[in-house]
Each structure stands twice: as structure tokens, then as C-alpha cells.
Image 1 (tube, rainbow, N blue to C red):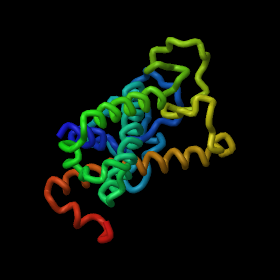
Image 2: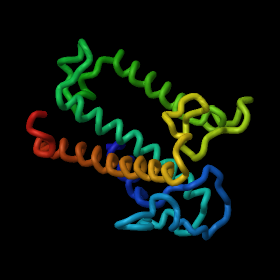
Image 3: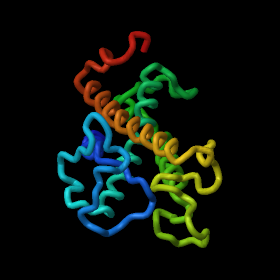
Image 4: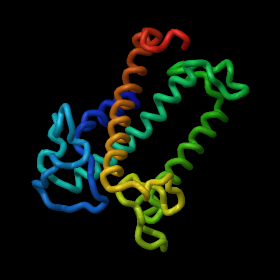
Length: 205
């Protein structure tokens, strides 16, 4: 239930626009309607009024929350579909997919999962501002171009070769895929509880 609630809360602000630069401002009444993410068909969409006061600091925080939830949701959708299709690690062939797996995981597997989540959380952050934003290191100024840029000067995948317009387009793609994934994983969980998730997935699954 908590997972479903968290996904619902994250998606409520899913269409509030994304930040363009890493730096933030404390100014109120900032024009947020021109930020990345305010696009057709909804444009600037903030039905809960979460950024109605134009607080840029609050907006930047919510933007990062949305981006992170989107990344997690994309992994969640892929993981759900892969396990639903019957793909398993050796020795886990008898563990069911979906919510039923929670009651069938051995304690050691839970320990491994928690350790993996901890390592992923520690690694996927701006190490120049870490750990967890405490700025308690001597790495110097962060090379990150925006909140969520976790290359840490180590890996690039050709990002620096893109023009500014191409970078904005790539960021918009990630943002929109994350939004779709949040809706997707929430839909899969709801329909599994309703007992008709098999009607949503391809027949060969």
C-alpha cells in the first residue's frame, strides 16, 4: 500500500515542469511555466498547487523527487515484466512474480536486496556534494550540469558532445518516460490486485 501511495503522490506533480539549471534561487513568484517539462498537451500542469507560490527552491526539490521516482519506476516496470515473463535467477525458479513474491522471498534474499538498494542509493548521487548532500568531502566543485546528473566526471556516454538543444531534448525524453513509467507501474500493481493484470500484458507472457 505504501508503494502505491508513494507512486500516486509522486505522479500528482508529474507534469509540473522540470528545472533547467542546477542552481536554484529563493525568489518567490518565479515564472515556472517556461521550464523543461511544461509541454503539450497539458503545458504547465500543477493541479494540487504544489508550486503555486513560485518558490524555486521548493520547485527544484519537487523536480528532483519526480525525476528520481521516474527512474525507479522505469526499473520497476522492466522488473515486473521480466519476472512476469518467467525470467529468474538460478535457484529462484519457484518464486512467483508480482506481490506474491514478497511472501516467498527467503530472508537472505531480503538482506541482499536491502544491501543492493543501499549501494545503489550511495552510488547514484552527486559524489561532489555527498554523501547525501552533506558536502563533507574535498572533491571540489561539482561538474554536474543539473540535479540528477550523476556522471561524477567518470562516465559520459557522449553527453558532452550534444548541443544544448539536444541535451534539453534528452532530458525531456527521460522526464516523460519516467512519468509514463510511474503511471505504468501503478497500473500494473492496481490491476494485479484486481486480478486482471493478465489482460493488460501480451499473450505470450
